Length: 300
Image 1 (cartoon, rainbow, N blue to C red):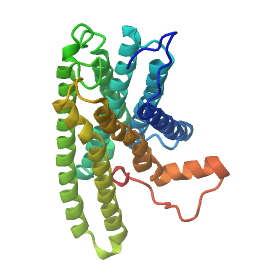
Image 2: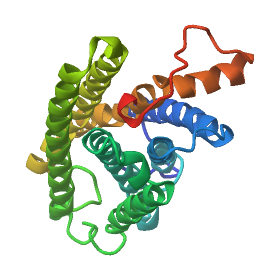
Image 3: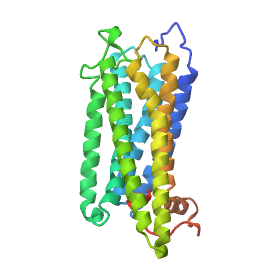
């Protein structure tokens, strides 16, 4: 994007406005999720820690989109530091969002595969260690452009997301595809385990079969939404470079950011425990139609 000078007024792109609005919506949604988890002492199980980490990453991603708009139109973004800060922030946040979704998928798989020992093996300490590992990895990825993996010195090596180099963008895209492939494999295994459990459940435990089917349906929605949002951008990052028209980049980036809009709905707002906390915070009551049955990881 061209820098704004004293003598010219930079025209605001409708695509950038859309990304800024999306970032604002992402920030509001995930700030609400974080507030509910923080102020509800009963929501401290490992699954809620992972949901909270996902909400934090999506909140930072939303704030990053807003900051990117400010840096582009209100600050001289020809300064390398400003560009590197904006890009590094977005890479770290969105990478953390993707890896947190993978962690939640692994958690769902383990809750079914090791159902008898899950609650003793998956301690809060272990979950926090996994979250720390995710964030250290993603912050490192965000620092790569500032550590020299940028195209400021050679514009021909730029990817569709300047100043990230083409090779760096391809590496990130391939990593995403591997993560998505792993999630699909875990999803297939979850389906096999869930349906095998459903066949073994007696008639008097029918509610458990319904719960298992609902959990599989939820995971299907998660993966479909995740793939529809991120696959176009990942594939385009591999085949395209900075010489391609910007409109194609915007057309693939916008759906990718929408994944962070969908995540709170799928992971948080559909969870009865979080719904109860929201109702209590808003009106001091809980609707009678909310389930009173304790939740498990596979239900989320």
